[in-house]
Image (cartoon, rainbow, N blue to C red; front, side, top):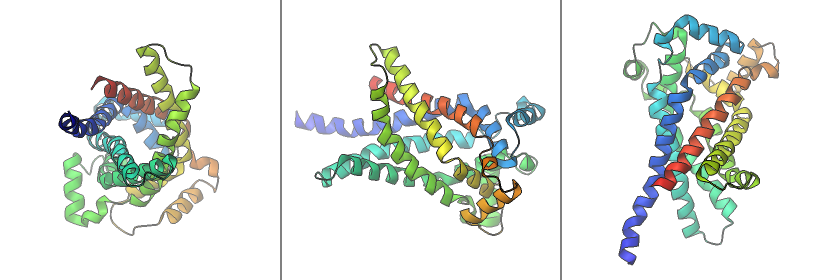
Length: 282
């Protein structure tokens, strides 16, 4: 009996990776056009209506241009996020049983978020594919990887790594730390559909709030990653440059945050609800 339980344990651990990956895939397929409009706002500081008009002018043919990197990146990072969080939590509780659960879970979340950053090259390529100034320079994902590696080396693929690290660890800690308490505040679900709605609301609220909180870091990341070659500027220098270009108004640093809020509600609602649903099915 003990042997059977031991055989099942690796499968139980692996399902968190699978559920996270499938949930992220579904999310990207649904919300990619919204993300693309948001990227235009982050990069150019234009209003939402102008970003949408730009996408309309570009045409349907280019609407899903650049979707492969986020599909690969997001399905991988969300798998790592949920899977490594569970693995690290289990290991920390095993080796530090006296430590407060809040502490071990927070450390596990930060470690999982840090590990996600290894996939920064996918965010890097996605940024270049979405920037209309590079539409004529690159054919597809493989072409960008080849050009960056041949002309600039592997370091160029990790441009924007620092803001990603500053974003991932803390946001993971907040997400996993608050997910349970927020769900407990919602009306008790009495059906599968009710649980699905609660998981969607919980994930959506958390994702949207964290999206607003860490929005300036995403602006810095986007600005860093549209650059090809040249000096690697610090987050502080990039932030100062963006603020100077936007007349020193912090409010303009949050251009696009409303669209980001809406997208995050749907994105993280879908991810959290799909993840929990798949977890129950496996």
